[in-house]
Image (cartoon, rainbow, N blue to C red; front, side, top):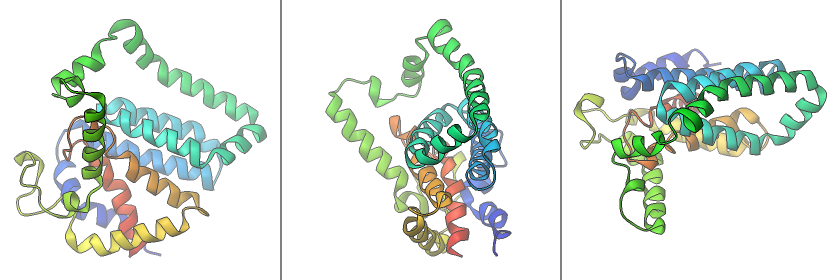
Length: 244
């Protein structure tokens, strides 16, 4: 009944209010991720024919911003795991749709594989060096994995989202405001409880939880910053509306 509050909630999130008025590519990535979630829900709840559209939207997320690659990697792996029965039944019932989707997957992956394997195989390491990622610094693998876990946990931490982060680059924060408004915290936490309680039975709630887990993954390879985890505003908005 409160579907119409979604746009209002999203507009009220300081992180989105600020960045949606910029030309940063992270905003485009987040917008495409919202479209991906919509297309995936239509595929699961309305018609399997939406699957190729979901793949195309996912490719747009992947290509529009480097962190979108991590977001889509985690989203794809988790959605394949949690909805594998539905995927298998769909492919068996609609073999032509499965073949068409496979063609779309090949087409959207081809440019990336050509770039990574043939043209610039060194670009991942170069990109990590440019970002000063701890993965290219001296240190043992266990130390780096420990830092990965702690950085990832910070990206999920309510403290990061609901309290002003004075360490954030000044151009990426609204002075005096956290990334998510504290007055929405009860609705978001209630929505999270509802999603956790109904996730086993309803795919829509599983998708929201997958989006939460996917948002901070790529950022955890470097460091948490709002531009790198901005995709969190999509599931945060949905949880807030569910809570309301």
